[in-house]
Length: 405
Image 1: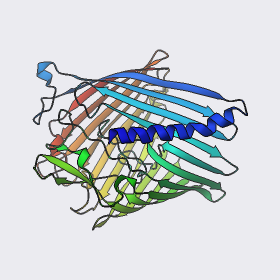
Image 2: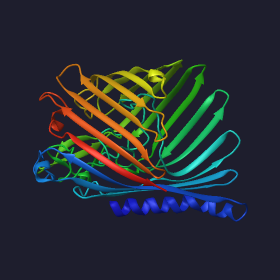
Image 3: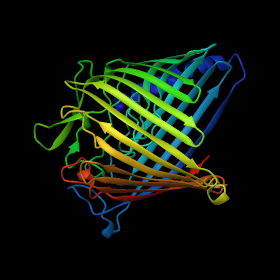
């Protein structure tokens, strides 16, 4: 499977670059290159499940090397973007992986654009959960917050008119979600067997998914309305025949979504809502809340944003499960606005039904001209009756240092 995906990836990258190479003969153009290489260290508590690595009392740390590279080419109407990503992990073989986050060619006309290749597309406005964001698959071995995404093969068309932006997507190949291996942390008691994935569609990974989104603004209100039909990015699970692993199951889904943001002075009011039709269940989910920013704290240059969101999800037991069914998210975002671009985001998700909560802290600061240091803290408090109990002893601290070039 990995060799097959790598072949598709390289083929797409070459196809993406070909139009640019031909145009480059006819007109002046330049490539720009940038990227970063970083070292990360994660420190966990004692291992929970059999096979897991790293015990703090034994001096164990999980080290990883991360490489991000970006090459961009522009002409009068065309552009090419190639963004490979590589991580090498000392503990988990599944976390060591390569991906093309982007590898596409795009051509822009008057009021329209066509794109082909691997691309990342983000939809959404809320902080705690991005319900409407369904184009790209989650790269779960990167982080449990599901912010990191795999590159998605696609052909897209964008039309910009006075009445808004209309985007159409055709996605001929499905990317499976990544999961930690037997030695990895932040995993379920049984390891997920990604090689044995089951699909509702007989076309399996070659089912063509389609999506459409209209977005516009009316004064202080930004709105997006989207529809998706294809292989769901969230898998369900079944027990393997030998009872030793979990097998991911990918169903066909239809999803309608809306995202709204209202900006007024220091207020940001946000909403994401979806209705999804899955295997044998229809459900509604939403995230709604606000962010209020206090500017110039103590007459200084720093700003403090306060975020409050409510998460609701009424999916039934036949659908892929979520921990965010009836929760409140409280957070604070502190931006020092200094030369080092220092920022801190701390938040907690509180379950209103069980005594569960999840705390997260992320801090970032630039060092000199070329380095960025980051720190992350994740603390889980699970309830035996809740979804977070599997991570109850998976608290960790992560430190990383990246050099940009």
